[in-house]
Image 1 (cartoon, rainbow, N blue to C red):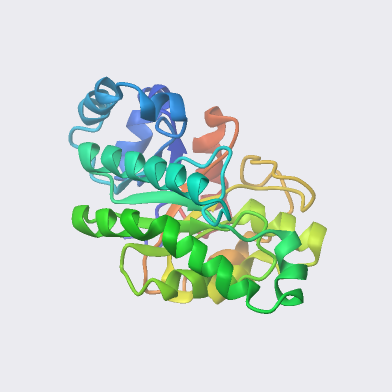
Image 2 (spheres, rainbow, N blue to C red):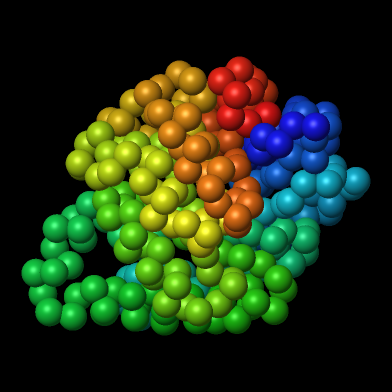
Length: 272
């Protein structure tokens, strides 16, 4: 029996119908992208939840969602904006409770600008973390209550450790770390950050979730795996040392290439 990790994928419900056999054959983990938009979360999403439960009846993999992220940061200086963000995250967690999802991706508040400027003003690092705590406080309690984990995904993060420290500061199993390989590769190629495998090593067993996408180190390409320049052997060698069993989620633009991405990883002997 293979000891290689089994990868899953991120997709919408329409794409679940297309890739259902692929998901079910190896009980692959799934991340739904159908509950991101404010229009969906503010509306009647109950039919989507019912469709999810119907489509995934008998699915043996772990289920999560990509949480809302458009148009905001989880560390806003404006208390009114923070209140809206808290509401949006709670809406996402309501979806998780309704469909049985056990992870929700949220976006890191750190930017390439903050990397160079947080230490210019005394207390800026601590203030950003405190604003994040104020934004997430109610969501963390809700996530704990429903057995869901919010995973903080790197976006522009140049420092692979700072987001890990932020997650640890909550002292809660409901807040851990995600890595997006393409985002890390962008930061490496464009801002001089470490390579992708260093992000895995920095996260250690706090790592519960990975977005697998290929890129060129210049932009957020979300190419099929094998089409870019990420050093996948180094990434999976670092992953193999972890005990946290992170969800390995293929997140690419062309969803028709999801099986091909998994096949590429199998062809180089790192996953299936």
